[in-house]
Image 1 (cartoon, rainbow, N blue to C red):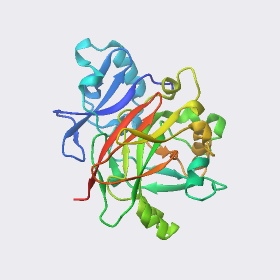
Image 2: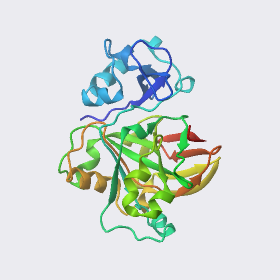
Image 3: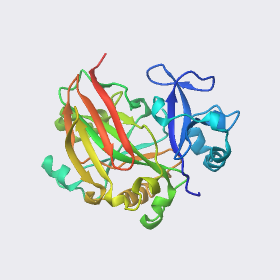
Length: 297
């Protein structure tokens, strides 16, 4: 798969080809060209009616790159003038990684596991930028966790770490929530503690890794958990026990990974949030994801 220069996203607004997001607002698959701006996929590939996941599973990125270079200027607008949603709503597989930063594990008085501590989340947890993170009524202590996720771009099975990053379409900011008090009652409650609605926010854009790291490396990327504008915890990918390439390789040897599957690589720190807070994930070179926190309705 040739590297794409396009950022992948979803934008809100009227469209005949879009799909309703969690808030009921119509969302349309779109791309951001680094020089030309944002364009709907349906304007670049006439007849396309799907979401970004359909772009990935349909192997359409090459066509999109070519179309974005030659399309009329009229199909592009400023990336600052659109409202972003979740890039797609129904990923086939969401892997999360626990206790992957040495410092975060010590915060919880736990050691870093001898192998990646992973779990799976359902697509009902997915929300996009600006959508509410509802605190479930069963939880008195819910935390938000900023993370960078890797997004698989092509079929990936039994790959080695040195080849793993070649299978990515890009990286994206994530806010992963946990009902921490439920988890602390028993570690076997991990699936329940991680799977309330709104417990996986991602967006606004999936950014190609080469652009995200620039002249640096993936290890230099900084991830920050921010609440109400204050940076609560921050760390670099270099401080992960298991780096993203290893995580892709490890999980590809558990099961096949398909286009659009995500691995959220762990947090530098989990922060307790309550209704009225605003949670943010800031990832250097990738962007900022922001979500308000509300009581469960």
